[in-house]
Amino acid sequence: MEFLPYLQVLWRRRWVILATTLLTVGVAVLITLIMPPAYRTTVLMRVVTPDDSGWNNTPYADRLNNTYSRLVESDAVMDELVERLGLAEAPDVTVNVIPNTELMEIIVDTPDANVANTLADILIARNRELYFGDRYVRSQIVEGQIKDTEAELDAIVDRYGTTDLQLLIQNNVPAEVRRQVETLQQRYANLQAQYNAAVVLETSQQNALFVAEAAKPPEAPFRPNPVLNLVVGVILGLLGGTLLALLFENVDTLLYSTRQIEKVTNAPTLGRIPVARRGLQVGALNDDFALAEAYRRLRVNVSAATADLAMRKLVFVSAEPREGKSAVIANLAAVIGQSEQRAVVVDCDLRRPQQHELFGLANKIGLSTVLQGKTALEDAVRATRLPGVAALTSGPTPANPAELLASPHLYEALNVLAEQYDYVLIDTPAMQAVADASFLMPAVDGVLLVVGRRQVKQESVKSALEQLHTLKARLVGVIVNRAEADTARVAFYARHYRPEAQPEARKAQPVPATSE
Image 1 (cartoon, rainbow, N blue to C red):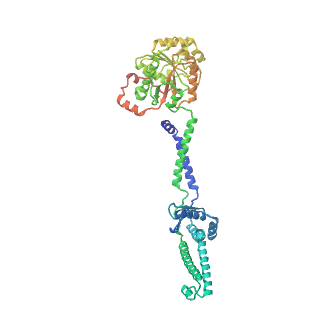
Image 2: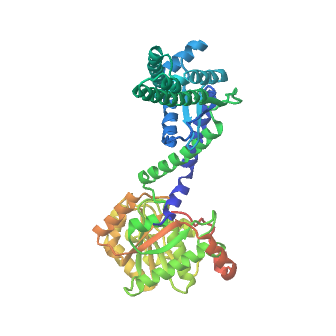
Image 3: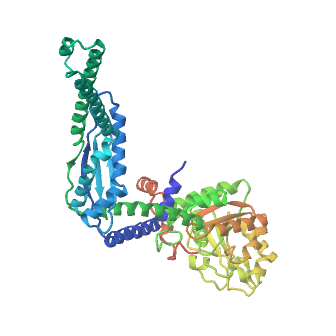
């Protein structure tokens, strides 16, 4: 799984994430400020379990602690607490049984420590009822058995005057009676021992529940917790911002990266042209090493893609205006001229021409006057200040641009230029704006689609590709304009391989390299 595209999305939508996080943190701060402070007191109690005397004490201790935790919150205990302290209502109480110990925390949401301590006192006072249960009844049963035995011995005394065995023998009391007396005396001794043990146990268990640490007045409120609220606000803000960023990314179809453009076009990428420095002139590529290398790579790739098919007439199209197509054509012509080949730029955008401005040429004559028969082709094609580069500007804007571009005279003019130059680079209007570019497809050898990163939506690019497919145009490849710069590689090659600026480049016309 590739994480780089996701990181790029998050970085591109960083302001959404930041704004969401700041908003969430602001809400958290506001809630913290308006929330009334809440205090909490805690009393720590110990529940002593019976000594090991045949009892299974561990499960019993757990049951005992759980019983107390439920009884503390019972209506009977709460009602007594409210009545004793004169409270308006019972406070919120939480019981926390600490595992593997005999300790139990009683947490009361109140700033008054006396409430928690009083609650503990009530629980201790109810200890016999809540704790002893059946074992308190057992001591009463043993006591009753002792009284029954004493009654039987008293009956023998009433009859024989004594229960002393020696005296009974001397008085010739029957053996049966003597055995009965002996049995009753042994039973009485055993019951008395059991009774004494039960009394000792009950007495010790009267202190089975006691306060280990009394509640103290709280030093600070437990709610609101500013630090916790801020941390939660930041976390929720980041999560919410990330989700919003991904949502906006799915809704926003603008092509933000070269990867997105390549995925949408599904065509060979012949060039990735980085953003040119503001004010950089057409042809002055050595003043920007990254830009110069990008155009040299484009020249090589275009040459390789068109060599086998002998493509000379290449039309450059874009889906939308202002994607930088005209500047790409002019600079590509410049690097072609630097390679000792000849290129002519033909501006077929008869509505919003750019090439005459890029090359600093007058536009009184040009393609429109040639197609109207007013000017000879050889007179309209003019040399530029860039070596090996000529230009046929658009000429004055005609009343019928589409009809002129559909005339056979354009085909003838392009064929003538193809015989005189190594490359005929044709500029056209944006395909989504007008249909002028469609008339040129039968007259050219190949099409190059220029896509401006962060300038066009994928629907427009797909529509342009569908038009080219319908026209059966031969798509040579895609040129990504304003592509992301590989700064590390550029810096390395600029430091070690940067050539000296060529004189021709320094003499270039002073027009921007980022025009349409």
